[in-house]
Image 1: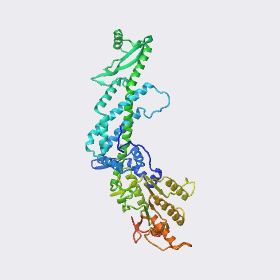
Image 2: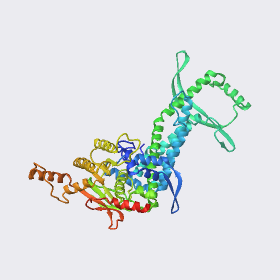
Image 3: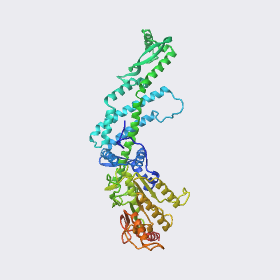
Image 4: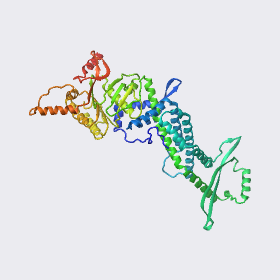
Length: 565
């Protein structure tokens, strides 16, 4: 039985995650989102109460789902519809998650995580299997009841089809049959005093009827189970006078064999009882396994939506608007009031949002003043893209983009003791790994890459690598302080034509061909810059602007000196 709350055609499997998910998590600061997902939030009337309790499993589920991108518009819309239902019915999602968790916890207590090595008591294992089966059937009954009470208010196909599957595969007839089987086998698990009724104590005993034949030597053979049931009777002390007298009377009855007089026969009868119970359970073992897989998936998938609810509360807590992003074609990328949600949560306050229309721009180069919000802007797009591609809402008033299952980040790293070579070597190795794993619909975010060498060498490296990647159809957004590189691309893109010095031995036609080829390579390029007012104030807005030949670092230098004097 499938849950189907993450995909409409399959269950969750962690296949084809992002390449180097660890680097993406570090570069974009996604650990803060995972932290927000596991912060337990509850509704108290109209107020949101943030408890000190953290559910690490919810954070784990969100992290696992986020690392596997959706690949089609239909997959994103399917998950978004379910999330909208979850946000509108938070209590229901919480109950469904806690119910699945409780069933699995009870299963764990019965030994699901037991060590599979060594010799174990076969009878004890069968008793455990029957007890687990009872827990699973009871859990299915509660899931069915919970869904039936809430499904009428649901609009998503995911929740409605889940209810249809549960009611079909765990129909009333199936439920009654399983309950009868459990009741008939209850003597095997509830062998002691059961519960008081009308001030009397009751115990369970079996009644098993078999058909058999006699083989050579009067040996019993060709056994066939006819019926099995549990008899509930008032409890009496098996060692009391009444029980002994009753045993004597029963032994005199015709056709009755007093097994208690023969140890070997008692052992044979116990083995026969085990074989009969094991046979009946084996007919249900596939059903039990199916229910077990169902609860594993139900817990994981509802945990993702519970984490999304917690993230929503963190956004509301910091007065950050969110939207459900639109999946456009591969050339689309536009947004309104897009914010960097990780910074919002770390600073515990609202942050500056950015607007942008970058449709059709395959290369975006961001330059401008230091401390102007360039890296924050780049991370805001990266985080929003990851959130969109797993079905989550995005911290913006509007966000539209294509889907990029091949998504890479290349951010500059601080040098540390773990590096076995220079920082430039480390950057080039990471870039080589990215190039080796590029595919169709690739997106690459670069933040101050190749700035670990001289400006001249870094500009040359960036120029060659980015030109080659762009010609291969990779969409690139880069924040750079390599101003020579940015200026060269700006000129060759035709935005600012400039006469160049003719090389020795180079004809005019050859020079024109080189210019034309370079201009073609740098088509569909956008240039943005961090806004800086005339008095040096940073607005943290990223606007269309030609690259400047300064990052205004002296302003920061003067500011630091003045603060220390």
